[in-house]
Length: 187
Ligand code: ZN
Image 1: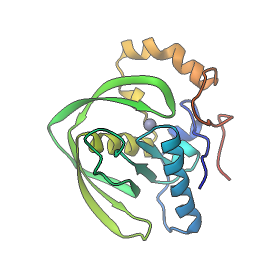
Image 2 (image 1 turned 135 degrees about the vertical axis):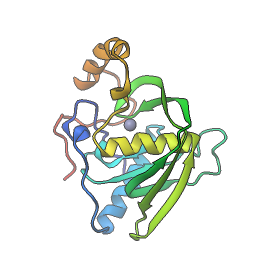
Image 3 (image 1 turned 90 degrees about the horizontal axis):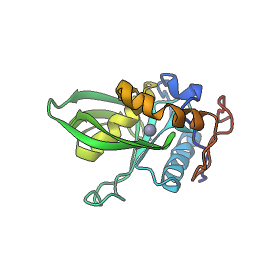
Image 4 (image 1 turned 120 degrees about the horizontal axis):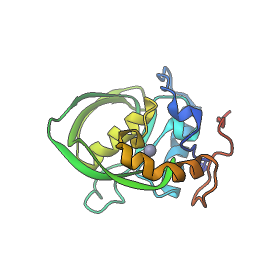
C-alpha cells in the first residue's frame, strides 16, 4: 500500500465522467488499498478514483473516525448507482480533499438507496442515511465529474474564487501529497 498524490480542483480528470469498471484484477485491488491509505493520511472520509488520477467508477468511504459512526465499516464501491433518494433533506457541512480549506453546509437528500459491486464483482445494495449517505452522494458526484462547489450560490462562488485560483496554481500549503501538474495521471 502506498499514499498517492491527490488531484486538485482545476485538474481535468476531476471534470470527466469516469468509466465503468469491467473487470477487477490485482492492480485494481492494490489501487483500492492505496485509495484507503491516501484518504486516511489526509484525514478524509471518502475518496473517488479520479481524485488519484484514475478514470474509473470506484470510490472508498470510511466514516468510522467520526463520532457516532464508529460501527460503520470501511467500504469500497465499484460501479455505484444511486437508485433512489429520500424526499427528506438535511444540511451537513462538506469539504473535499481536492478542494482544501473550503467547508460549507450543503442541503442534500437525507438518505439514498445505492447499488454497487465489491472486489469480487458481486452486486450489493445498501440503504444509507445521514453522514454515510452524504459521503456517498459527494463521492458519486465525483465519478460524474461534479464537485461540491458546483452547488454553491453566486455569492459563495465569488467568495471562494481567489482561494480556488490558489488551489489550481498550487499556491497553498497542502497537508498531504498533491498531483504536480494539471494533467497528472497514474500510469
Ligand atoms: Zn471530494
